[in-house]
Length: 80
Ligand SMILES: [Zn+2]
Image 1: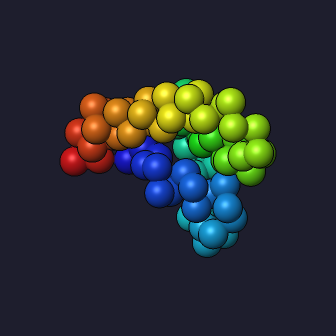
Image 2: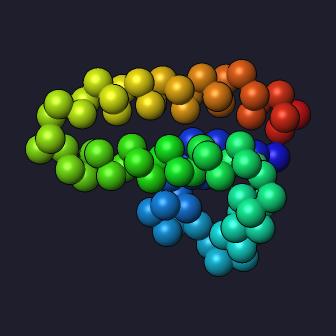
């Protein structure tokens, strides 16, 4: 099973229980796809937290679309 958007956000916001977080840390070291996804979410949250820079809004929207299209195309079938 790969990271979905909710799990990625929980990891970044440190809402994930310790044991589960360790499993994801291990997975992300081996799985390039999830590593990239987590990095994208970090970037997105960075933009959101600097939201006074409104000229990055288009970039943030493009990134959100990319992340959610990855969920639709890949993660769902991998998790089955
Ligand atoms: Zn993965």
